[in-house]
Image (spheres, rainbow, N blue to C red):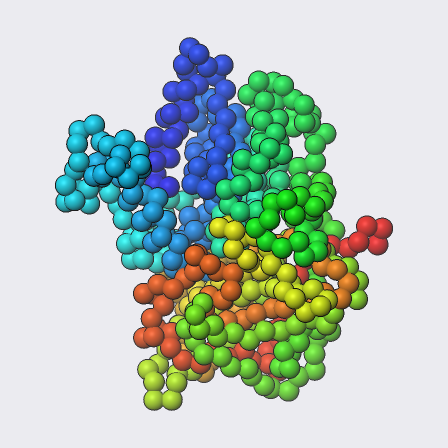
Length: 474
C-alpha cells in the first residue's frame, strides 16, 4: 500500500488503456489487498480508469488495518509472514514447495532478500501516529475518487476491511456509487455465482456500455442491504442464502433513530437516563483471548422485532489505577463488543473472515488518543473523528476519570422479539477477534498494567448509541 505501489498501479492502468487491443476503458475488481489497493489508485484518477469494484478491501491504512483506535493490531505479523515473505522474489525452494516457479536468476542469499524488502511488521510497530512519514506517505483523500464504484462490504469482517468498504463508499465523490452488503467467509462471496453476476453487470455497464442493471441511468438504488435475521449458524453459505435483501437510497439511512442505551451499575442497558449515585465497576487491564477481562451490560428482552443498521458510538467514563504495590500505568486500552442473544439465551454468531464465529461488531480506543477533532468536516455525532497525530496525545493520569467517545464499527441485524443485545467492555481481545487480535509487545505491563474502571453517577452517564431503523409503516 506504499506510494510507489500506487504509482506503479496508476502507470499500469494508463498503459493498458493505451494498448491497441484496448477500448481505452479500464476497470478494477479484486478482494482483500486487491480491493484495498483500488481505493488508493482511483484517488489518483489515472487516465482510462472507468470503474472500481473492491470486495472486502480496507481503505484507511491506519484506522482499518494497522492501528484500531491507535492500538497496534497483530494482523500484519501473520499476513506478512504467510503472504509476503513466502512469495518474495528470489526465495529458495518455491517450486519444490509447490509455491510458484523458482526465480529465473537463481536463489538470492538471505542478506539480499532482507535488503530488498520493507518489513511491515517492524514499520507499523515503530510508527505510532498518522503524521509519521510511514503512515502519511500511505494516506490519500477518498473524496478524490470520482469513477463509478461497486463496493462489496462484508458484515463479518469485523476486525479488518469492512470499515474501508462502507467508509470508502460514503466518502467517495463518485456520481455513480453503489454498496452491496454481503455475508460469509472473506474469500467465498467474491467467487459466489450471485455476486459474480452483479460484478459482471456493473463492469459491463461502464466498460462496454451494456447496462442491464440500472447502473448508469439512476434507476438502481445505491445501497443493497442484506438482512441478517434469525440464528442460521455460521460458516454455512447455504444457510445464509436465507437472508433477504433490501434496497435503500442513501447511507447511512436518513430514517435512522439514533437511540441511547444507558449503562447501569447492575449491568443493564436501559432506554431512560438512570438516576444514579456515584459507583464504579472494575476489571483488570491487559486481558486477552486466553484470559478475557470484561464487564457486560444487557438489554431487557426486546418487546418487538428491532433492526439495527448503521453507525454505533459509545460514550464511557473511564479511569485506570495501579495494582497495589505495582507500577504506575501510563495508558489504557478499551475494547468494545456488541453481541446478540436469542430469546432462549443462546448467543447468535455470524461468519467471520476465516469462517470463525464472530459477534455483531467491535470497537477499540487507546485512552491517550481520546482527543476528538469536532471541527473536522468528517466529524459526525455518530462517527467521532480522530486525527491520530503526534500532537493529539494526551496524558493518562491514574485515578482521573476521562469521558471518551468510541467508534464501534457498523453492523446490520434484525433482532427478533425476545432477543437481547449485550454490550461488552474489556481490556483486551475477547471472543470474535480470532487471528486478528491486538496481542503485541506494545501492550506491555509497563504501559497498561492496573485496574480499569467504569464510573457511574450524575456526572458520569455512560451509554451506547444504536442506529435503530423503524419498522415499515411506523
